Image (cartoon, rainbow, N blue to C red; front, side, top):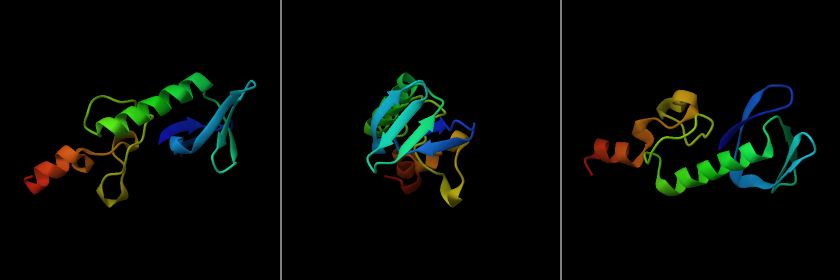
Length: 102
């Protein structure tokens, strides 16, 4: 999931796997696979970059390296997000292995 900004300035998190198309005219219009449309402040190129980063992190695993604070991968225990909503170490596969002794 990626963090974006609505035209009214409010931040929200979008499941980037639901993006069907992106257009700029001049605001960025996101069309979702559900048919819904969203207008956001971020330029199309930035959304594409965040979506690619999210996809890479999902394929590599949560603990594979540095990532943007605008890519949201999970939630910590008790429903609290880690820094910027990013999964805490105990939510990574390495953290689970360390806890279980695997």
